[in-house]
Image (cartoon, rainbow, N blue to C red; front, side, top):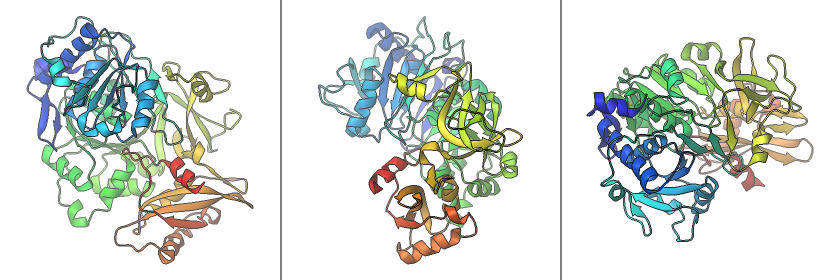
Length: 511
C-alpha cells in the first residue's frame, strides 16, 4: 500500500510524531506535501525516473516528506550520514549523481556549502533554517498542486554502506516496476507478514533515517497506516519512557542499545510499563547471546532478529524461542535468498564448517554504483546470482545461520582463524566494560596476536589492575589461544550511530 490511501481514510491520524519537538505530520499532510514535492521534482525541475536526489538530514519530518516525494516520482533517494565530514559527504553526493541536494540546516556543517562544490547538483534546498545559495524548502512547495501526479512510478532508496572497512559503497537496487499505489515495495509484504505491522502499529524509531533499516521500517509503517515515533537520537531511559507514553507496539534496535538499556539502574529499568510491546526487532550488528537472553527475560518473548544487508540479497529471521534454543543464531534462510557457505576458492562447505556466506537470489538485482570491479568482487566465481556481504559463518543441520565475524576482521594467529566477535561477546557484559573491540596486531612469531581495546565503565579506574581483572574473567570462558595478549583503554570507540564498530579506524591507529 501507499500513505495516500490513508490520507483518504484516516486523514487526521499522525503518520509521524517527533517527541523531541512536539511536531507531527498527519497522513493528509504527508500526502499533500509529498505530492507537492513530486510536482516540483518532475514538472518544474524535469527529473525523470532513475534520477537521484540526495538528502543530508537529522531525524526530521521533512526527511519523511522528501522520502515519499522521491519514491512516488520514480527517483532514487540517497540518504547520507549526517555525521560525515564535508569531504566524505561530497564524495557520496558526487558518486550517486545527485541532481538535487536537500540539507537540514542543523547538520549543514557536514556538507561542503561552497559554490563550486558538487558541480553536477542543479538544485540546492535547505529546511530547518537558511543557507547561502540554497532555496527554502517550504517556499518551493508553496503553490504546487497537492493532488497526486497522474504518473507515479515507484522509486527506491539509494543507500551507502557504513564504510566500516573502507570507502562507503553505493547500493543501487532496481525498484519494482509499476505505479506506487499499485505495486508494493520489497519490504512491506515481508515485514507485515512476519511482524504483524498494520494500521494499529505504533513504531518507535530510535536510530537515524540515513540507515537502511530505520528508513525502510518507517516506510513499511507508513505503507500500512501505522504511526512512527521518531526519536532525534537514542537515549536508553528516554526510549523506555516513550514506549510507555505512546503505547509503542513495534520497535527496532541494534545490540549496543540493548546493552545500554540493560546497564541502566534496576529502578530505572522497572519504572516504565513496556507491556504494549509485541515486536522488538533488532539487526545491523551481531547480538551477544547473553545480551539477547537477558533482554528476553526482561521484555518477554517479543524479541525478534533478522540478518540482512543494504544489498538485500538475502535475509534470515529468528524469534525469541528459537534464539534461546540456538544461542548465537541469526535465523533461517529461504524466505528471501538461499545461504551458501563457501571456502576461499568458492567450494561449498559441509554443514557446521565456517566459511564465507554467499546469498543466492535470482530475483534481486543490485550493483555498487560506478564500481563494476567491486560489484564483480562480491559475486561467487562460479554462480553469478550468488553474492556475499563479506560475512563469515556456518549453517547447522536445520539451516539456522550463525555469524562468526566479518571476513575482513578475522585474525589469523599461528595459522588458526580467530573471530573477534566471539571474544567481544564474552567481554561486553563485564561490569567494568562500557564498550570493546578486539583486533589483530602484527606478531613476528604468530603472524597476528589478539588485542582488546576497551572503554571502561563509569566509575572504573583504567590501568593494569583493571586490565588484568577483565582478562582474568575471560579465562575458562573461551579457549586460551583466543585470549587477548594485551588490553588498552580508550575514551571512545569509533561506532556509527547505528551501532556498527568501525574497526578499520582502530587498526589504522595502531598501524
